[in-house]
Length: 229
Image (cartoon, rainbow, N blue to C red; front, side):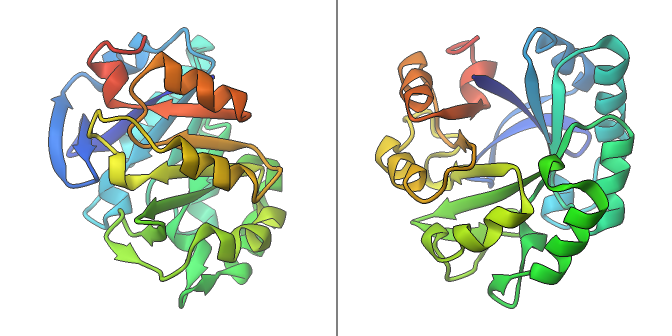
C-alpha cells in the first residue's frame, strides 16, 4: 500500500531533503489533504514539533477532524509526541494511530517507562514506533541527533509497545534517487510486526518490491511531483 505524507512546517506542507533543505512548500494544507482523499491511509507529521521549533498542532487537529468528518483516509499523526497527553489529544481528535520516535528513547536506551505509560493509556495497537536511520544508526530530534544504536539493538525490546514500525532511510529522503531495498530486507528479518518503509521511494517498482517484502511505502516528494499517484 502506498501512503502519502503531509509534512508540516511553518504552517505549510513541505518536503525536505534529508530533513534539512526545503524542496517544496504548499500553503493550502487542507486542499493538499483533500488531494489524498481516496487513499486509505495518510501520514501527517509536524516537523516543527519534531525539531522543537514550535508546532502546527491546530493544523494537525484540523486534518484529523476533516478526515473523520469526511470519512477520508485514516490518519497516522506524528512529530514531537513526547507525552502521553499529546498522544491522547491526537487520538481523541481523530487520528487512528500516533507515530512516536524521539520519546521512545532516553539516555541512549529504550525508554520503557514512557512506552509502558503510553501503551496503558492508548493501547498497543494505536502506536507506531519510528526507527529513522542515517548511515545505519537511529536518529532522533528531527534527525539531528544520533543515538549510537542500530535497529538490531532495539527492535525486539520495542515490539511489546507498538503495532508496527515506521522505518525511514534518511540517507535517501527527498533525493528522488530511490531507496535501499537491501536495507529493508535486513529490517524485515528482525521483526514480524508490520513495517512501513519511507525515505527516497520514487517508483512503482520500488513500491511493489516493498509490498513483496510485506511492507507499505510512505511516499512524499515522488507523489507531489507526480511520479507516483
